[in-house]
Length: 220
Figure 1: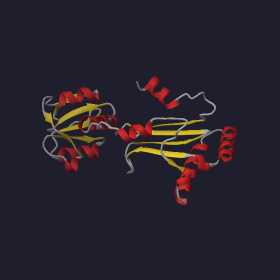
Figure 2: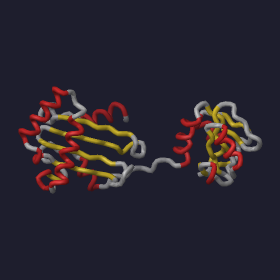
Figure 3: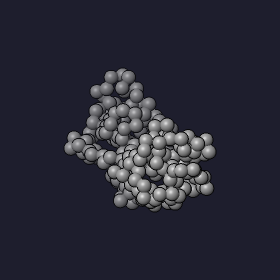
Figure 4: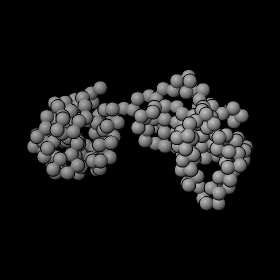
């Protein structure tokens, strides 16, 4: 979808120098920019390259000037760069399948996913390492008590569930659940760059869904 330079400037909280009605169809680095593209220059070296490119407009910081291209002047070029990416390449909707919805439903008495007792040794070791990574984020006295409970119940009582992509950078959610442990890791916002994680003891928190409560309070 094309945007005028004025529309882009409004979204970036900048100002246009030049033709504010020029249509911009894409956002690209200077060495790959074509006519109708918007590009970005955070310093004089990059500005020189942008001026020699086929780009129709350039995002610049401060009072930078150019001989013949439309400029969108902003206070912080790096912040504007990120915002421009979001304008031209909006994050796609994340669609959860019905099977994933079933996995995501938390049932304390009936854990969803793969039981640790059904994992092979490398998989079991990876699960133990994952739990250990969360334990190390707790205060020492709390970590000691939680590990004691885990060892008493047995690591093979845990269950692991996953929903989402399986490639690096894909949005995803996973859960580790046991009688005295619930770990939730949610990385489905911000195109896989905004993580929420929670550690709970289901036997000691009256069943509150901490992650869901956070979303209700801060992401409604």
